[in-house]
Length: 378
Image (cartoon, rainbow, N blue to C red; front, side):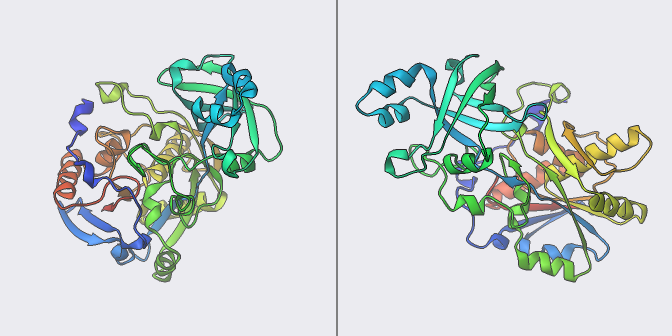
């Protein structure tokens, strides 16, 4: 199967640059697999389309300020001797996107570095607030590059500091996807993105990208869903490098996903097992939820069990031909052409049906990607 089979043409003006003021005001394309139909609607209708005995599963991960700016060690002496050290620091900055904290050594992180070609193993990086001279935080971090990969991938080891994540939140930025640009020179996220690029039910910190299908929910919508008798379970998958990396192979089967940390609680595992045993629908909110549930189900199958509570690292790649064990329906945003996420949606809904729905969404003026509209596939 060729990656090019999952291509489509998207005008640039269809890529949402800002979130709607009202999270629940997004449009929603309802695609019915059994009937082979689609209908234009709005997300506020979502509770009406759920069945009272459904199990709705959410990914409750929290995005952190994973985009940092650093000064290379090669520029440190020059900057310290300059009359304008902060200016020199900013002029020579390196962008570092933290993507995955290693479990063996929590001080080590996988990351994407730009410009990557200039950053080699042994280089030391010095992090501070990019607007320090304008009254920004004076918090700082120091790290060494300990391994190098392709396409700007690096592994760095931070010098231990108390409250590492608190420092990162002080000096970092919300890592909005590269297709969201705030101004003509590619400016960064606004302060409001710290709240808006986050689900209202976000809890454990660890993602470098939001599980975007969840951005449409409000406390009122969740309350309405519960009021209809729908059971809600929460799992965690910290979205990592895979969401930023394109598929660089020609054949779908040759693509490999990066590992991402996940956790399923005892309560969530029990709710999922109960729903499957009772032949009730499991409705996943977002592709990250799908990957977590299906990875855990495959893991359980290998040891003769269903989904079990626990944590680990998931690297499941779902594309057409995959046999779903848990997920019956999916709420999802619209994804990039030729992306692994689009392939997952096609696996659940059928490639022809999903690609036709995408063509319709483009023609009907839907807003695409992270801050865009959504699709219910059932």
